[in-house]
Amino acid sequence: MTALKQELKEALIDTLHLEDITPEEIEDAAPLFGDEGLGLDSIDALEIILILERNYGIRIEKPSEGKEIFYSIQTLADYISEHRKK
Image (cartoon, rainbow, N blue to C red; front, side, top):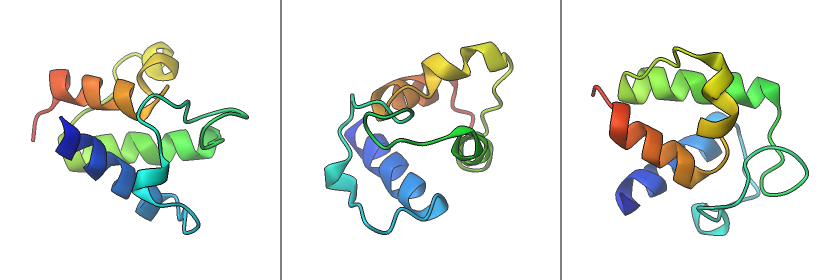
């Protein structure tokens, strides 16, 4: 699971062009969206959906679950572990 979290952090940094942050600075349980944590927005959420589809073969079937799934690196990693196709 730790390797998956590292992979996710690196994918977020690369895809979202977060040049001023390192994977070590992203806390596993910190919120990804809003004023706390990384402060990502809805455009970033679309990019995360693409990461899930491209890298793990996962499609978000219920957009209403997105807020829960995308809350933190930990919640993303848990979801990927349960639903991964690649």
